[in-house]
Amino acid sequence: MKSLDLAELTISEASAQIRRKKLSPVELITLFLERVKELNPILNAYVTPTAEQAHADAKAAEREIRRGKYRGPLHGIPFSIKDNLATKGVRTTAGSKILSEWVPDYDATVVERLKQAGAIILGKTNMHEWASGGTTINPYYGTTYNPWDLKRIPGGSSGGSAAAVAASLCLGSIGTDNAGSVRNPASFCGTVGLKATYGRVSRFGDVPGTGGFSTDHFGIFTKTVRDCALVLRALAGHDPRDPLSSEEKVPDYSRSVGKKVKGLKIGVLRGYIEENVSGEVKRTFEEAVRLLQSLGLKKEDVSIPHMDLIPAVQTATSRVENASSLVNHLRARPRDFSPALLYRHIQSLTIPATTYVTAQRVRRIICREFDEALERVHLILTPTTPIPAPTIEECQRGYLEVDVKRVALQGLSGSFGTTCTIPFNVTGLPAISVCCGFSSLGLPIGLQIVGGAFQEGMVFQVAHAYEQATKWYERKPQLPQA
Image 1 (spheres, rainbow, N blue to C red):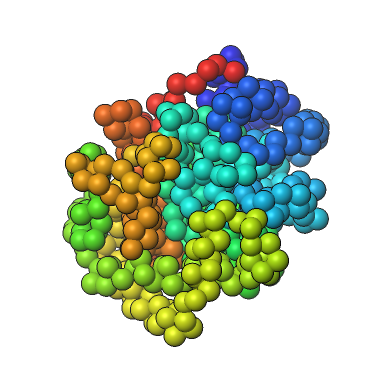
Image 2 (cartoon, rainbow, N blue to C red):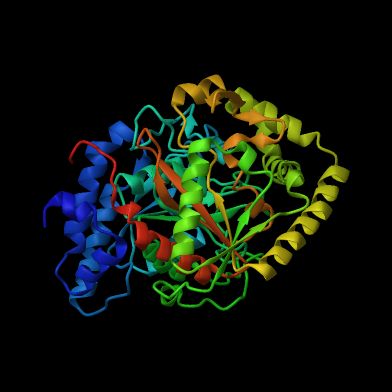
């Protein structure tokens, strides 16, 4: 196969060839490292490539497979890791100046499990400073550029991971999602992005202060839903090092992919969201809903009575939890935070304990309201982001025009880009973003599919049915050929 054809393989396709010994892990990893070398100076998706170790690991994988010790569908597959997840012997900066030279002596559980499955780590990806924003415009490690339009952001905070998958600089990546930081860049870059149920994937090995501990999730970027199901199977499960990880049994998610969806009921979330969504995204979303109905799914409109309180609950929860983890750094090295983030953390430290406690009580009410809605429908649908990817210039000036209306990217109700995603960090429900079309400027638009707790299988079932009916994932960004 030609190099470009190999780069455009999915995990499922590549693993099938590796298993049959028609594709060498060394050949595959060498190709992807060459792409990283050529395209990363353009995209700035990686901050720390690990080419030497990746080559060694690929040779080891090839030897194992030749001896008949094939580990499974991730064996020999190239991955990247967001730079706030600990990687043994590899610099882990969290997008910050303070940790610019930190080299952990341990792996995060998700990294450890990827390695156990035979995956090859190509490097650490760029991110928003301390994972505290949605642009991946980083003052210390540079801006990551969207592969679909280099004048635009890839989203964040896991922007480097999304850009790397979209540009075929790896076949899968692991990010974190505290308010939409996997789903937001997945939508902007046209990849699949999953945030599983809270506790489904261990959070051991995250950098403290890069996500509120009760709202943050580790997430997965892939090119297809089938690939995402394969990766989640490898990562999910209880971890004694994470006391909040669940002991819920881990199913074979691949069995849900390809199952018929006829008769399932989807709930379209009304109120709160659509008034903030651009007309173009709204029309694309409604077309996606109609297509799902044509596949035999039944539609019902649903509403959540206290939806308007979600931004306040998320702010009073995650910002307090984040800042509390950073107190020592804020005292010792305050000027090594960017000014905007420093002042935000200082403000967060002034939020009273009574406000935090009240937020948790309201949060419980909101969770119950979603649970009640999911007793009437199997899944809930929303757009993933209110708009396609904005330009870097728009993000730097702080506002953009949406349907002839000026909208602040950071308002009293929080970040505009996370309007549709934060409800599912507050509730901990599983949510996936899949591409549902393209804007008039050729930018990807995301569809968010949400299930009940630990119903990732059903989420995959419907997401895959939609993906296969539309084939949007086959459209690729136009990049210089590596």
